Length: 218
Image (cartoon, rainbow, N blue to C red; front, side, top):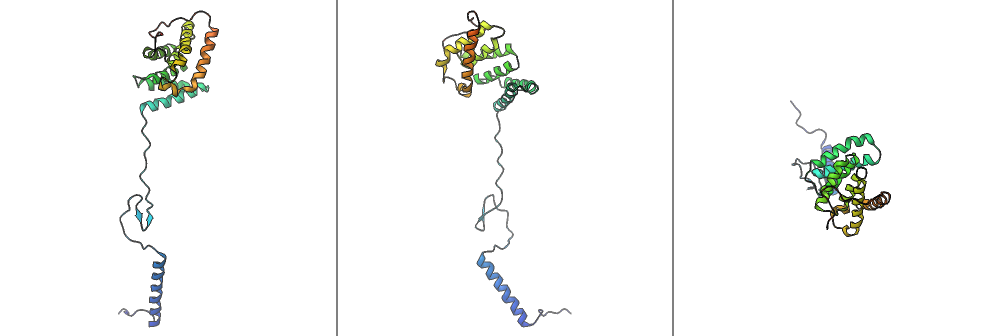
């Protein structure tokens, strides 16, 4: 038969009950939270007077537009070209050119980026054609004139001289007229210097362009 009596003498049992009561009282005084079975709190919910430790939902990175991706390709390709990393440039330039061509029709800023990439890849005829697309709608566009001049310096120096002269003539009047000017503001001192130096060292008269873009009122 099992022993139904509590172990120990009555005095011992009384001491156990008193000790348990004291522990509970101390726990209540210091604010111990007793464990309870509850459902998982919502993120950042308040539990027991404190913030729950459940992490907030992950924030997804912003989705990049195709133009943003093309601009990243542009920066990578032009950096490789300008720093003399010829092997990387040989890979990156065609990728960047294809990225912009896949975004047609391009605005003036996109066409200028494409013309610069074509210049860096030594595709001078394509760069000239791209720059003239800018000038077809904005004949005095400074970036279009600069790209057309650079594309023509070797094959048609007198036409390049004409583009550079138009660039200098339109410089003051064009300031602030196109949003893409602000994106490339640091280029203008260099372009103006290049225009003046090319005109000074190129003999003969400036020739009008043979393409569709000819000088006219803005």
